[in-house]
Length: 306
Image 1 (cartoon, rainbow, N blue to C red):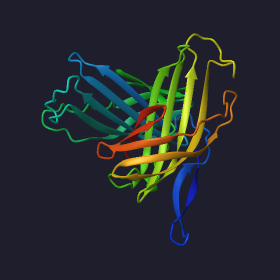
Image 2: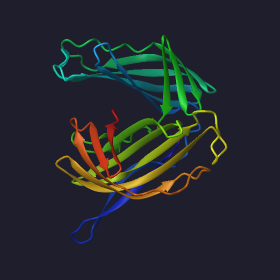
Image 3: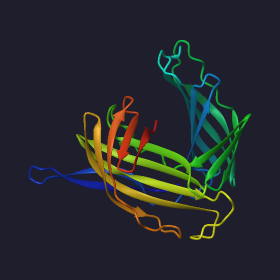
């Protein structure tokens, strides 16, 4: 596993130029973990049912290797969104969510692993709500490039390696309504050449009063759609990874963040050219979502559940 380093931000108060130290935790490097299956893996699946309602399934598997042994957990949430605004019997609103978590143990064999569920917990299920789906009891996992493929009974999952790492206590203790925490964004699209573009961002934010500090890591993976090789590395895929430091303020749930600088991982396809942006954000859904806007677009950041 990657070691952890400390990033200390010296904050100067206006009175007397007194400095105070705010410590947040950052990964020691931008390089991926050497353990084949260790890390945080995620997948988002969307579907529309016969009534036209949208179902969104989010899976997160976090694994840590201890020699040849594995431990971790599997979080699963299902969100239902009404097509026409009608209310569901479950929860009495046009949207409801179910959550469950399974605790995993297993053994590592090269790039393969076998895990089993040793415990499970489900979130509350209200009146009229179906029972959350029980997790499979066993899974065969295989690392394939930057993906983890899981064969779990009748279910097959393809999960992408995320930039997340176990959440430090300093960020996990953020109070409700605070932006302190770890936030994630994932997007898949096709460029004009039909190549697949996968974008992942992980934001580490710390709020002190109305001030907000932190950084985010941005990973972009591009995969060839037609077998042609990219000129920059003569490969069928390439990735770029960069870290941006941010700073801003928040008041009444509305936030402004500015990118201060960035550091990019060297690579054959890395140009090193970035444009620093300023973001306007709104804290929503009882502090579980940040709506971000900037001059070139918008995105939704989801808070990691601890």
